[in-house]
Image (cartoon, rainbow, N blue to C red; front, side, top):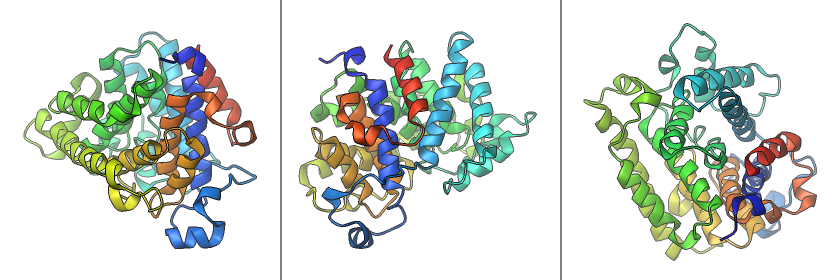
Length: 339
């Protein structure tokens, strides 16, 4: 098994995420025929000379900085993380660089988070399971030294500040877990089974220490019923993924099998499908993900995070990696967690 340090999994995952984001950003909101007409064959998609990223990478970096700040202050706790997340998300919301077509859920929640007297649970968009929560969660699969409870609770908490739907929480937890498994050398052929087992084990576990009374805003009769709704939708998505891996042609749009990725569980499974179709061809996985009818940048950034976590930093050619936007920020966090 390749070790985390030697393959630089954190640097690889963060770089892959940003590269997928930059490759998919120009193709988002276009159907596949339009993408092919503008950019040519999908297997030849090239990174734009100016490799600009979207809010996906910006918010990933915000989460990474928040985790670093919280852990600099001591053990990662709900209070420490919520405080630093709130600061970073509001800073992102107010930044002049926040001009990359950010999602409405994130914008609305961050506007409400500006009011420091408001409990974060009251800012959360409880009905939103958009992919904006799990497209940014990769750092929590990369940070070393966390317990399983800390990693899962933190993954769900970072989702809940903006996207409070139980499926957004579960998909964020699953995404971070998938990244973590791949950094540790889990075999891709067994990944879906491992994720399914994790979902079943956690189906009725509500992380009250991390989420507080968030569940009460959704109208469910109990916290266990609230969170089970999310895990059940993720389990259904994983079943579609399991079937797709065996039956889908790499030449067809992956969104036809596992969904367009605008919602959390579909972003997870379609990003995973692109990675699993091309485990040893990471650039091809990014190109397949970017040439999709759905949320191309989010699908591609997740595919890149999975590929980079598994293969490490050397998966990405220097002529691509060196010109992606925010490269120094990505390298700083990657080096911290690879060490």
